[in-house]
Image (cartoon, rainbow, N blue to C red):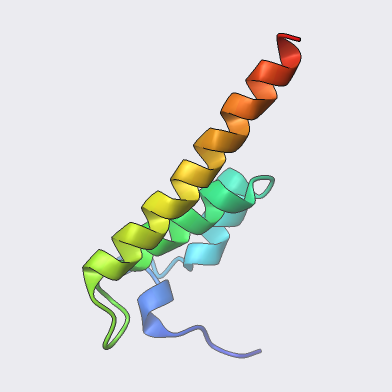
Length: 76
C-alpha cells in the first residue's frame, strides 16, 4: 500500500486526514474536503497556509449555498 505524504498524517496519533474525513464526513464531499485542507494547512511543501485556508473556505461556501438551496426546496 502506498504511504500518504507526511502532511496528511497527524503529528501525535499518526492518523491520516482521510480517516478523519471518512469518520466524520464520509457523506459530504465539500465538508470533507474543507476538513482535509484545514488539517494540512501550512504543512505541504511550497504551499502557503493561506492557499489551503482559501480552498477550505471555498468548499465551505459551496456547501453553505447547497444547504440553503436544500432548505428552500423543503419550504416550497
